[in-house]
Image (cartoon, rainbow, N blue to C red; front, side, top):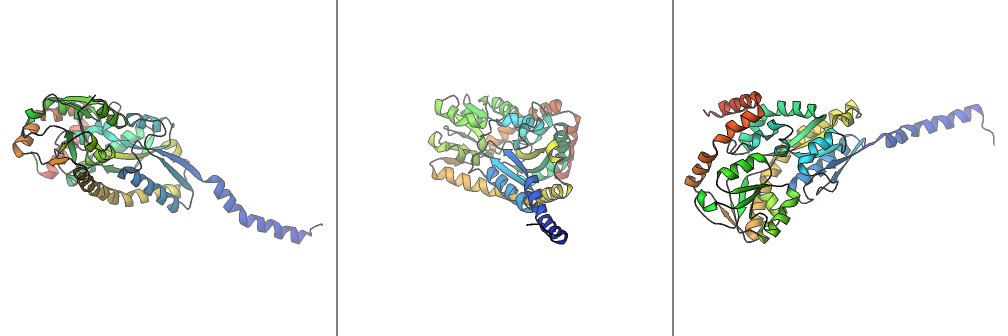
Length: 334
C-alpha cells in the first residue's frame, strides 16, 4: 500500500514523538560504585540510597550500581587510584587509608585532635577545600563525605591503665593509628578491613582499633570480650567520581547530583551517630563489655601520643598546620 505525502508526514511526525524516549534510554549513563563495606554497613546503605535518589533526580539519566564487600576486587587503600585511573568510575573511599598518596587526607586521624562529630564539622570546614584540591589532582570530584563514629579498642584484656594493654597485637587501618598504638605500648598491625576477621580468627591479631559499626560487621563478640571507648581518631568515607566520567554527564544532571549530595550529607552524618549507638548495643548483646576509659588512663593516652600531631604536620606540610591552627582557634584551644 502506497502512502500519500500527507499520510507519510503524519507517520514521520508520530515516530518523532517517540524518538526522545528512545534516545534517552540509549544515553542513560550506567556507573559502578565500589565499596569494601558489606550490605549491612550504614555507609553501604547510604551509598545505595544516594544511588536511588540520583536515578530519580536525573530522571534515569544516571544509573549508579553499588558493589559492596569489595566485590569489584579493589581493597580500601587502592580505591583513590582506581578511580583516578578510571578502573572504576565511582568509589566510597576511606580517607585515612590514602595517606601514602595524599598525606593531608589523614588529618582527621591525628590522635585525640577531634573529640566529637561537632568538632569534626569544624575541622572539615577548613580541610574540605584542600580535600577537593587533592581529589582534582587525582582526577576526581568529591560528592559527599560521611564520618565513622566513635572509635574503640576491642580486645580481651580488661584494665584501668595503659600499661595493662602492653604488648597486645592490635589491627589498625592506617599508619597514624598504628603509630598511636605503638606509643601506647601495644603492637600495631596495619591491614585492610577485608583481612581483619581472618586475622582475628587465626590469632595474627588479638585486638582491633575501629568503630562499633565495624565491630558488628565482624561479629567481634565471637573473638573478643571488651571494647574501650577511647574515641582516639576520626575518619570519613569520601564518595568520589572520576572526572572524565563526570564531564560526560550533562550540566543539568551534574547540578542535580551535587544538590542531592549536599542535601543528603547531613542526613548521612546523623545515620553515623545513630549507627554507633545501635552497634555498641548490639556488641553488648553479643556478650562484650563496653568500658568507659577512666580519666587518668585517657590522660595518659593523650600524653603519650602528643608528639603525633607534629609528626603529621611534618608529613602533610604547612597547609595542615594552617588547618589545625584555624580549627583550634575556632574551638578556643591553644
